[in-house]
Amino acid sequence: MERSVLWSIGCAAALAPASVAQSFNYVDFSSTSGLVLNGNAAASGSVLRVTPAASDQKGSVWYSQPIDVIAGFDTTFTFRITQLTGGGADGLAFVIQDDPRGTAALGDKGSSMGYGAEPTSPAGTALSNSLAIEIDTYFIASPWGDPDGNHLSIHTNGTGENNAYESLSIGLASPATNMSNGSVHTLRVRYNPGVLDIYLDNLSTPLLSANYSFVTGGSWTGGGSVGGLALIGNSAAHVGFTAGTGGATENHDVLSWTWAPIVPPAYCTSGTSGHGCAPAISGNANPSLAFANPCLITVSSVEGQRNGILFYGLTQFVQPWASGSTSYLCIKPPTQRAGSQNSGGTVGLCDGTLSLDWNTFQQSNPTALGNPWSVGREAFCQGWYRDPPAPKTTNLSDALWLTYLP
Ligand SMILES: [Ca+2]
Ligand SMILES: [Ca+2]
Image (cartoon, rainbow, N blue to C red):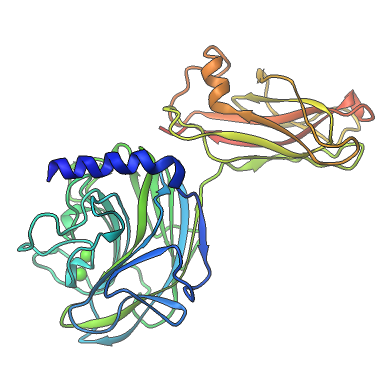
């Protein structure tokens, strides 16, 4: 067993660079292309029916490619629970996993909701190396420890086998909303490394927030600490849904699903150049202390064929760049300049670009401003370029707010 787990993780890691996804969007499931369906899961019209309302069903659905989770993500799905019999059971789970079975992973029916296992099931039934967010619609006090028949609970047992015992919960909430009332509900899961936020219907205020890191783990609500997951290539996992029914039944339908990485926010205002260009800065991800992910910063819509630089500092502020300028300095000195570059593109057009590979810069400049970095430290980055007609003969882009991750 141990050998097979190690082999599976190693094999997946070797494949990871070519196959790890970053984002996707299913507005509905009229096509299930890109998904793997197991057990009783099936498409039903334009919805994904993870289980139908029939006795003793279990199903799982996985995005077919592993997806990057380590640097943070923001995922939202809509679900609807209908045709309740016996009060309706047992629930749907949103699951992040690197179980050795990969996209074939499926646990037990009933209270195990397709991700856990009955106490009598053989080892290897429940999804190991996983984190499940239960939409639990059926109350069973013993042995599972449910608080009621309408709760959200985040279950993980680190790299071990997960299951529906509430002793494995790292965060639990019983919403006022009845999640199995036949209405379409929206669940948003936002992971900013170190914090997992769960939103139900109200997408601006989390219903449930848990301190958790896929690297270092978290704490069970009933006490004890739990480790993180062994991720594919140290960064990615399989993501999807599981569900189960027992003697009581219901349809567990997912109607839409989007996934996007968390990207660092831009702030401040870009200046406008002599040719009307307003450059915009963006970053693909926050920087990682362990260089666990690329951190590529791009300033687009720069005037073509201009010389410029990216620079950064450790404190943000906003100050006019020069009298009569449309630009603002958005970073408090002292600042650190990266190398000078040409924006490329075409003279007089807004098709130039300035870019900075943050990791390469920090690795090649170990004494640059901010070093040594630590988790949670912030850096603020902005683009500067020559624009002869402008006040001070230069203009600036807006700025990017970076936060160091593990
Ligand atoms: Ca339950
Ligand atoms: Ca539960």
